[in-house]
Figure 1 (cartoon, helix red, strand yellow):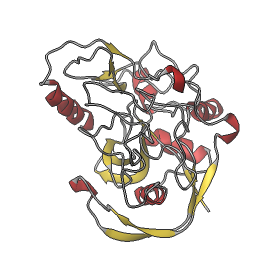
Figure 2 (tube, one colour):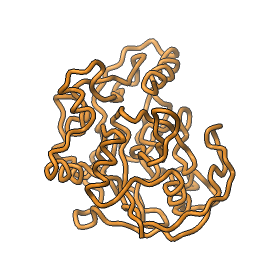
Figure 3 (tube, one colour):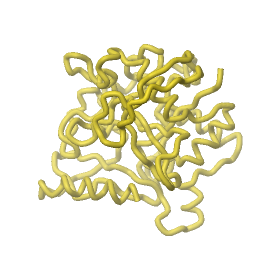
Length: 303
């Protein structure tokens, strides 16, 4: 399982440090960034991505990214931001929908819950900062004692593939394919010749919500955040779209392998020493029936 694999990777890094961490939840931000993000009238807006072509897997870093084929993509409209807590709440209120994590918890299934990365606050760490928390849901992102009050414009997380698809159908939209997502992200890069330009400018200043520092030991939060940020806190790309790179991973409609789905864009946990998937061509698997506090989604519509 991907969760087990992730725990193993983090555990390998932890072997370098024998300290004991003091941990906290993952919704963190600096005071000067607390009020950023899109205004209410801009939530739910879409941008048009014209038909065109791109080379999938250009400048691949990891083996799973290599393809090198030029693909043609038919134009579509893409929501300019990740689906927010407020948008998902409206869907739940209208349909009484229960997410996969909520249903599993209610049914008392073994392993029910969702994964939470617990931030390190004193410069040390435990072996496994990832925790499977039974009470973690989209409404309680850090566990049963947390809530999304005041976080309307944060991206909704702790959603499975089925949850994202259900929302998209209700909203008259759909999830983007991996090819559509990568085409949109590639064409929106500030510098089309530098695939990391969506994350950092030529001076190294952050353009997106990623991890600055050595993961998972310390996050310098030079981008203003040590967790997820409200949508639209960073500059829009060349297509007028926000947070395609960083913030939270985004589910696509493309399977990765049996039982897993392709996610794109990286998240606030992607650092230069560990993930480096803050690039359009980066891809990862996510179990279809699992959820975490760093995976969300956005939707698209056919023109």
